[in-house]
Length: 460
Image (cartoon, rainbow, N blue to C red):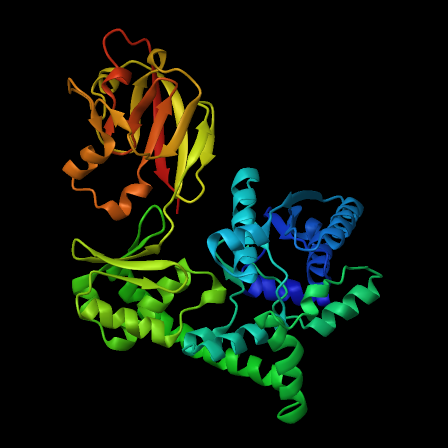
């Protein structure tokens, strides 16, 4: 089958590409990403696509990266595609955070892609993973001790990330590049077997093909396909349970009702945990059986908290089990009253409108996700930000000021969720603890002429 048609069939089967999508393509200059970009460019008219690309310089190979930047810019110019060029010192970050180069690079790539998607309005991010990557991922998980779910391999779609080439082999990609007379960059680091995935690709798979099975990739993919069919059926059962047991906080913390969780059979509990950890952690840190069992035993025994690989934590809070990343959410984003903006890291859409004063606006909503303020009392620029040490405000109707932390303690807001609570500030200071209380100085009163109404709406 023609490679383009294979991508179309796979994408339609998995609902990866739809009409009027705006797609950001991860472009490294290598064979896989060049093929992906070229194929999507050929699909622009069919699906009315808007396509852009991003190249990230990891600052690990100075001369090679400079050549790759030039190459990526040239190929994008030829295809009339906008290119975002960015640079991050991965080695310094890895050292600072005490992480490996591979893990740090992956985290930074995904964070960059998502940031650009929100900033420029891309609704899809396309990655160049293919069949051989699928085989390597499955083997990698087997050696780490995965359960059956891990044998499903890389998903064609995860949130806004899509992988249209998962049904294509590396050989097919190289043949396509040759047939289209397309050049690509060779990354010398791909041959360095000090990296785990490179070892699997360059050493292990050739050994398996030579000594055990020349069609080892096909055998692994067949196993994955069989497991996927069975797992999808079992997952449908777990999903019904999850709807009753599991909720997602606005900052993507996973909350399970402890009483209902403990009533589940062990295999359902393990799947709930595995799916939850898989949602929170990168795919390269797919939870193994030992981690899931240790977490399940900790919950059953009533342990208050436990650390989990992937820089995750479990904590018992108010008869619920909370799973969350160890790193707190931090936001500081300038906000214009004419904007409708998406917040990165917290699932809110923020919008505002100017209204005339009415009896309703005089009621000054003390709680809820809509705040009404006297526009004349605010001094731009406005910021949406996380809580900082020492933040104080004067709750509506109070004479004196109060620390935000003390206010939330009085309201019995658990410490785990305080990094999800946002503040609105102007040049004079804090004027809204979003969803909880407005500041006395910004209230609408009898002298107000114009009301600023700001709404935080939860994004699905």
